Amino acid sequence: MASPEGAPVPEEQRLGPVLRRQEQVQAGTTDQRLLDSEGPSEWVHTDPWRVMRIQSEFVEGFGALAELGPAVSVFGSARTPRDSKEYDAGVRIGRALVDAGFAVITGGGPGAMEAVNKGANEAGGTSVGLGIELPFEQGMNEYVNLGVDFRYFFVRKTCFVKYARGFVVLPGGLGTLDELFEALTLVQTRKVTRFPIVLFGTAYWSGLVDWLRDTLIAQGKASMHDLELFHLSDDVDEAIALVTKEVGI
Image: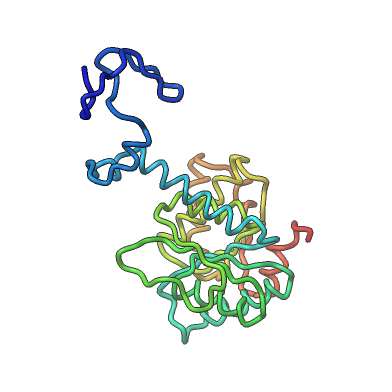
């Protein structure tokens, strides 16, 4: 057996922790394969390479947010109009959280996320946006002063939880519901230290709460105690008090 250059290939080869013998021995060296620009490119679409991309997203996200300090994640719809009461409430919530000593984390997009980032930014606070690569949404809103873009939802959601000491959930769609139930599940199963969750907008959320109580809990799929995992509010000051009451800064 010989290498492409004609040099003999050893019968036993050690590559880090891997031992190769006989027909498993590879020609060339690891550095040679790394520096060979004419080799096949299919490897960038393989699962091992995806693992490296996932790892790099965790590293970048953790590195950007490690020194953030106390923060609250706020979720809400990207479709919230700027001239709506919900948008105005988002601005006031972002401002109030900064005044209370917290950084603000949103998904970095338009609508309710933009409103919260705007309030935080205008109050002189840290306004974080954790964006996601999507085919149909805009990029980071202009009020974010610390932003990270992600390819993978689960990496992004880990950062939402890891660096937040509480959640405020404004009216939103499927993405907002996903983030809400992720937080509720983590608290219920004690995968995270319990943190406060506030649903802002009683009229919007009351139907969901009724279903949780009258269907989910009534049929034994959850317990009445689970309704204590979150609070409902229509008042900005009350929401801020609820989401920060268990947090010492």
